[in-house]
Length: 484
Image (cartoon, rainbow, N blue to C red; front, side):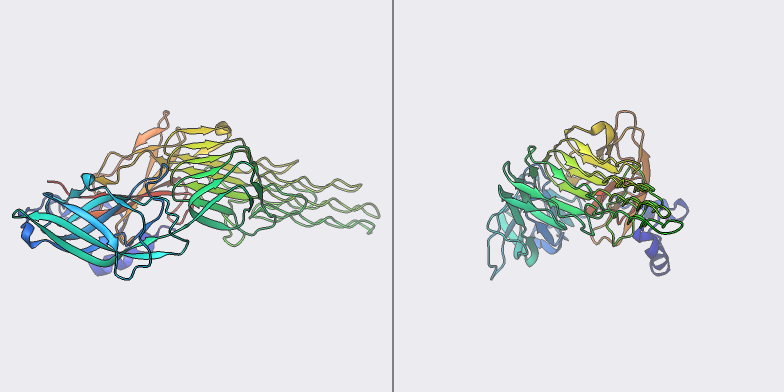
């Protein structure tokens, strides 16, 4: 669902304004234009800092093709002259994280109320998964020829992640997040069948699975790949009048006798679902064949293919990915139905190189769904049979316009949505719908009003039909600082 729908009534009753964009609810123009404010000269000797957003920066941001993090600091009487930010471990911090503050790109708001600065957090072998390191953030600026400093003690945390860099055995299960993934040539990769939820591998920097390594999530017999639907049981033979085979598993299950597993979700893959979510974006198994009257048993239904998401905030490289449905068995009785193909989703914030993707069903099983998102160069062997989801193209970390020029790329002539939230995530603008032109690249068409929130915004693009809970949306942090 869209979170602001649930909050709209409360916001209206408490604050006199709705979080839903409705032109009839807008205040008079003089009140609705936050940029039309009277500027008061900042006094650098009165520098103050009060808060910062986000409160957590994650290892890997800005490394191996991923976007830098952006830190927004609130306060008053900030000036550009001599402005810089220092981030250092707080007293008692057990580790010293690696990071780089790019003070050459610091931006101070025209009213002196906030500043923003890019921060890079390299892959840090000294940090471990679960580390949360408290950091002090100090703002420095020039006042009367002297350097003035103000500190926010322990207000920022650096989150550490593990790294996966191996030539050994790797078993893909569940949802995992790393700062860096490199599964090298020579590694053995297995995917246990029958998992209830999709495999999700995310890296905050780059994700590489050697192209020589194939990923196989196909159904096998009646056992599905991860998050897939099982094949239906065979109808027993030797019974007067015959006996019915079992239904397949999954959201579009095959029905007896021998119906193939279906796939009713739209091509744009609005989410990646597991058995527990109840959503339609996963495979289904074929039904078992009916047993014949006083004759042979029916065949078992084939299972559906599995689901996998490969997500890199930076560059992504992977070889062939197969998530086919399994065939139903064909004994002397009625045959079982085939399973549908599974789900393959690959997203790269940087460049994407992906081998052949196969999500076909077997027999009368339906094809699955395959999608890729890439904000930079995409070299995809099966691009012609995959949906290209919306992705940002090199979005800036800091902007000075509340309606910035932001480029997105996706499937030509297909619709997409975008929305944004403020730094608390509680105020939402959108969603707004657009359609890609024939070129597949366009600029976000911000409405005349409202624009971005002052300070930190989280801006998201997502496929048509998806909502704010979608795990196939792409979001970036963008700081908007008012400039007179």
